[in-house]
Image (tube, rainbow, N blue to C red; front, side, top):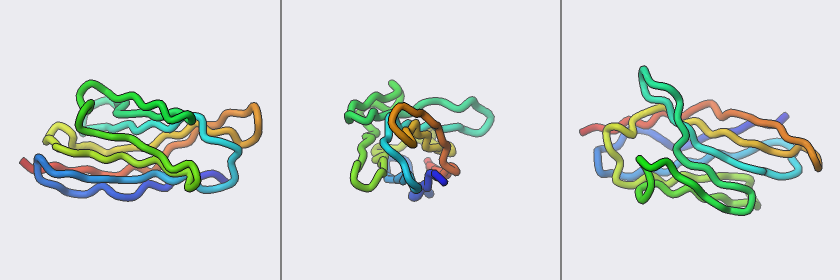
Amino acid sequence: QVQLVESGGGLVQAGGSLRFSCAVSGSIFSINTMIWYRQALGKQREVVAGITGGGSANYAGSVKGRFTISKDNAKNTVYQQMNSLKPEDEAVYYCYAIVSLAAGTRESYWGQGTQVAVSS
């Protein structure tokens, strides 16, 4: 059974940094795309950053230059380094993965979410 296991997050002062990870556990053929979403209290879930199987990364304008998404193919893990955090970055962050369980298949999975709190 495939699961996404998130770790990291927590409380940080504005201007500080956090790093968290999302590991794909279970038997898969390949990872197509991994995306970080976030959902602030009372707001809709939004895309933060994504990275393709080939390593191409994209970012929301609000985090570009401050957040970095990366991956370790050997560990089936994606990371998000968040620097210069602002109070508006406070949210629950979710990992989302599109994977192939076998050649030619596509399945998607969500992580459990990890809370990021930023104090001003």
